Amino acid sequence: MSRYRLTPTPAQEAVLRDHCGHARYIWNLAVEQHSHWHPGRAGAPGYLEQCRQLTQARAEHPWLAAGSQTVQQQALRDFTQAMAAFYDPKNPAGRPSWRKAGRNEGFRIVGRGPQWDVRRVSRHVGEVRVPKAGWVRFRWSRTVPPDAKSYRVTLDRAGRWHVAFAVIPAPVPAPGNGEVVGIDRGVAVSAAMSTGDLLHCPALTGREQTRLRRLQRKLARATRGSNRRRRIKRAIARLKARETDRRKDWADKTSTGIARRFDVIRVEDLKITTMTRSAKGTRENPGRNVRQKTGLNRGILASEWGLLVRRLQDKAPGRVQKIKPTLTSQRCSACREVDRGSRESQAVFRCTACGFACNADVNAAINIAAGHAVTARGGDGVTRPVNREPQLLLHSG
Ligand SMILES: [Zn+2]
Image (tube, rainbow, N blue to C red; front, side, top):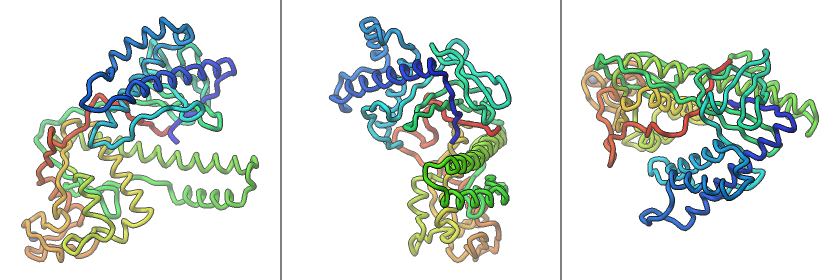
């Protein structure tokens, strides 16, 4: 997990619990206010109105006023964003619901500088400043992104505290060269570019994988509740966190490079892609990469691809276009002829009409580069709103 373990003193823990309680109270108040409301009916208060009500509530309730205003305001902001996600047809999120004590406890702090800061005090120890709690120690298990804008503190059901730092990836300026690139989700690699580049997302090394398997076997044999079992679990979690960090780091660097080189970045529309590329496909439209994309490998490739596209949208807002994936894998990128037979194998495309041969994913990527953006009602199907909650972007240490 991309989080750091917080180790508050008992006095600090009491403050953190208060923050959690206040955040939950404010959130539930907002849920309550919205529960009698549905779209098309006026009356549910917006964020600003709720902020005004918060000021009022703080004036009336000393216990609320004694808490951190930042914590309470952010709880409202979180709720507003959760509602926006709920009403966004492109992002089918569940309706924000009542929060129970002891479950999903946490709060968010923004405003680095006046409200919070982070520092490293020794090799394995860092400190984060929490309003009203002062500097709280955490295990410096990896580098904290220097441009972190906010953080979230959470308490899990086992009573452990964590802190996760978030940064909004800075957009990369367009090169202004008018160049368009197409990127396709790959068969054996994470992605292929119309330039012929194949993008490999790093995984665990062979030695690390061996170690992981050995740990997993040990875990199966370890007695429940034993210290040994806890140690093994921790070692497994560390290895997995290392892999996650590596993937995120890769997506971060790769997307920056692409955003810097090209003005327009075209990818297939994912929603359509998943339909047309379901494992077997149809006779007219046979699924690609049936064998390679089944099972675990398919899941990994899909998550790497998803991560890369999200990062591209962060780095090149307004410059990522989604393309309808019509026959991109069967069309010859040289002569435009469509023939299933041209797909010589999973990896090789050889045109039955003109003889053009190419890596199958690169051929598809060239077709994607030549494609037209899917036009959605009310938008160009290009980007997500920019004023969303900062995405967690954590760097490996
Ligand atoms: Zn051809």
